[in-house]
Picture: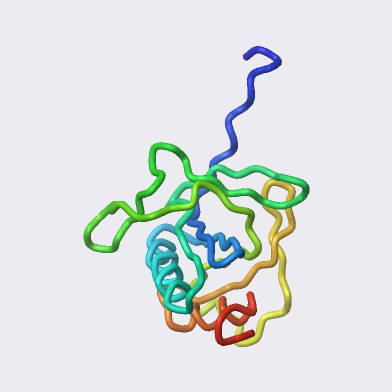
Length: 154
C-alpha cells in the first residue's frame, strides 16, 4: 500500500441509528435482537416527531473524529435491515453519525436493576453505555429514552 492510500475503516459487529441529534450504537451477541430493537427505536422516535434513521445493521465501519466515535454504513449493506422472519429489507438510512450512547444487549439474568454510569471504549473513544435485557424492546425503549433525555423523559 502506498503511503498516501487510506486504510479501510475497521468493521465491528453491531447496529446503529440516529434519533434526533443522538447516535445510538447497539451491540450484543448474534440473535440478541439488535436489528429488532433498532427498528423499534426508529419507529418510536419518529412517532415522537424526531428525525430517526438507521445508520447500518449488523456491520459498521468505525473511526474516531475529534475523540468521538463515528459509525458509517458499509456500502454493501447500506440501506438494508434484517427483519426477523423475513430477512434483509430496504430501509431509509443515514450514511454515518457520531455515537452518543452504546446500548449493550445482555441476557436478562445478567441485568442489574439499577446501573451505575458506565462507559465503553471503542476505537479509542469513551462512550456512555447502558445495558438492557436482550429481546425486551419495551423496557429498552424506556431506558434508552430516559438515558438520552429524549421525548417524554425531557
